[in-house]
Amino acid sequence: MPSYVSDFHGERHRFSDLKDVLAKASHRRSGDELAGLAADSDAPRVAARSVWADLPLSTFLDEPIIPYDTDEVTRLIVDSHDAAAFAAISHLTVGGFRDWLLSYDATSARLAEIAPAITPEMAAAATKLMRNQDLISVASRCRITTAFRNTQGLPGRLGSRLQPNHPTDDLRGIGAATIDGLLLGCGDAVIGVNPATDSVANGIALLNMLETLRLRHDIPTQTCVLTHITNALEIIRQGAPVDLVFQSIAGTEAANTGFGVNLSILREAQDAALSLKRGTVGNNVMYFETGQGAALSADAHCGVDQQTVEARAYAVARAFSPLLVNTVVGFIGPEYLYDGKQIIRAGLEDHFCGKLMGVPMGVDVCYTNHAEADQDDMDTLMTLLTVAGVTFLIAVPGSDDVMLNYQSASFHDMLYLRSQFNLHAAPEFEAWLERMDMKDDAGRIRGLQPEATRLLTDV
Image (cartoon, rainbow, N blue to C red; front, side, top):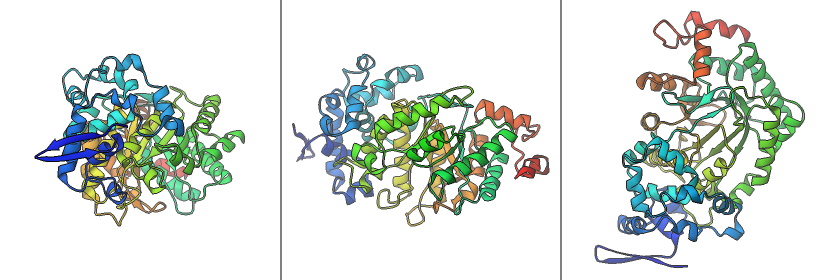
């Protein structure tokens, strides 16, 4: 395995392998520091970036950062690589690739053409050389469209996941929170519940309640109970109304094993969901969540920095043509992303990498109360992500998830973002809002005005 050397300002910096260069080139991250992977000062950090700038993109194909023989995610990345699409950029170094991404030539059409050729390591390496505005500029030109009962990812649209969690899974409480979000125009990406009790019986009860609500009001959206994929398979076998199959995934085989999944069971679940034929305008049936620090927290990161491991999770997602993917960017805590600055940077990195690789990328703009962050930081991140063309954001009542005990965006935040940037929900969902007279003559959401509250009578 070759070593990599940089002479920077009279100092020689030596990096043992590609993993070491990736880690040392990363922006500051508390998780990498606690794992002993990060640069100990700005000098080696910049030296590592100077190494990156001159490395050919093809290096990542020749030198896997996690061995092919020991990791099925690496095998997926290598075996599914599109060599024909890669030919257009194969001559570039990482620095040259970064420059091309920021050029006029990197149109939405061209970015879509090369997406199957971009490995996670290529995407992550590019981020090490990019400022926040660079990540926003490129991601805004990456358009990925998916569909089930409505169409996500279209220009001029900002989707939202309505997350009506309840600490005891009380059906009336979840129903009331769902109505609250619908009245404020949320829920086109998915109405998705994290169950407090992760069991087959509870999952069926939640799905049946959401299905009743959806059918009663003919809502063109999809529902999901974020239960473990093995539960979802049993729920499907029992005939319950499953729209999307959910699973948390990560970027190494070991981390996915910790989640109780592998590529084979993901394929089995996708086939099972497709067999139901519940989609009306498309057949993207998978929903994945990821997050920087997940592999490291399980000691399953294989010595790779947390942002690169995160990007590898998008290769797993990409293989299953999901309707939705989102990073839960600040959920794990300050041990991995210490403060608002790190959370903002990580959110922009994750969104950029997912979009560049052709993944329909959303973000849960969130933080835990013991992090050095607050809602002003989240306002900044959600605004930047909207400029960057994020597919969807997660929204909870009052920004406070009372079941998972963390802070996220609110239903009202979605009103702000759509109004500020003249964006709309998915077209099928937008037409439903108008059909239900939930918008006023100026096209604004009525919210909890008397004209809109008749929906509440069925809770």
